[in-house]
Length: 110
Length: 118
Image (cartoon, rainbow over all chains, first blue to last red; front, top):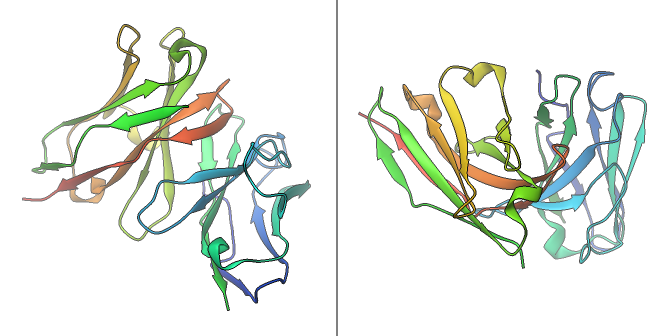
């Protein structure tokens, strides 16, 4: 199972919006609505930010939103803040009843 | 609140085995599964497999088949991951994470650093 493809880095200024893409196949992202997004700060465990494509767990700011079209999922951060600077990973359930993570995207707040 | 507390860092020699524990609290252990995910230094996340705490069913990543075993002890709400025949490229932080219906990984443990070095 190959990792899902994400851009290596994305940057934006405070207050701007950025979007991170996550491209897979019809056997993972395109086949199921079980796409999640995780935020990871250096030296910390990942934190769930979005599940089932577009749902936010309690406590996650509504600046974070998710969507999917075909084999590509996206995470949008609106009103970018300094604390949003972190690594972001997408993940998807697969047709083999396994999980696959994305390659990861480093978000930099300029 | 949901908490997953993992065992401490390990240093192992190539060819040895390691067993990492993950003690859960704050929820009904047998209503969820536990996934194991590792992260090599400076690298991304790699899914290793998951186990249902309800019935013990497992599903492992193909590349680790034959080297990894995941188990649970429902009497202590603890999950275990054993990795055998360790190699240097197994050096990583190993995370346990609660898994909802085998499809959503939500809460994560703090991670356990396993270093494989001669």
